[in-house]
Image 1 (cartoon, helix red, strand yellow):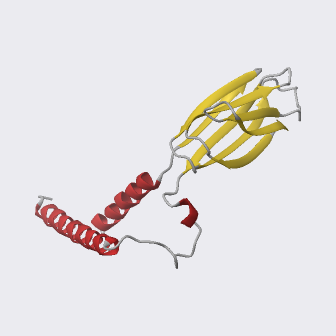
Image 2 (tube, helix red, strand yellow):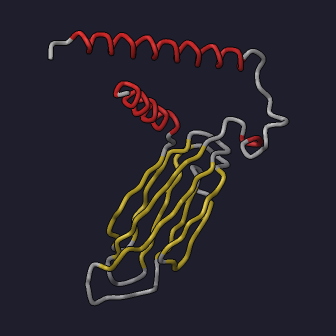
Image 3 (tube, rainbow, N blue to C red):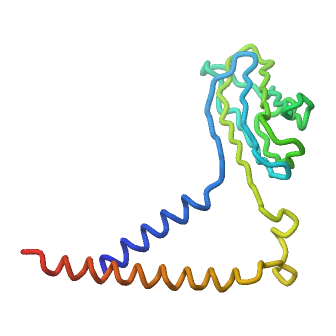
Length: 173
């Protein structure tokens, strides 16, 4: 049972690594203006953006003025803006691949601390990601290859588990 639980743990970690998507998160202190860049590799990707103004640097200061965030594409064209907000969450579809700029402006006389997150989601067949699968195109023979691969992987893991258990049982106590 020990080997099986470690196998599941390893498989879970592998799945998380393989399914992870590019993301960036940062906490920073802003005086007047701060800009960050993030490369988006594919047109049609969805970029999810969120930020929260955490606190002012001085304990006696409380303000609801918020900050501005302007997002620009690789050509410098404005993609999205968010004005006078203490928090916001939005997404946009990338029209031009490349480095996108995210510029924050603080109009308050006080330094502000901001948590900022960017996550890029990519679908190979973007139009089909939310469909029920009835019209899903699957290359001929792909299901056979996948099922054979899963079966051989399962057999290999069973074999390795048996070998390890056999070796472990032979170890001196």
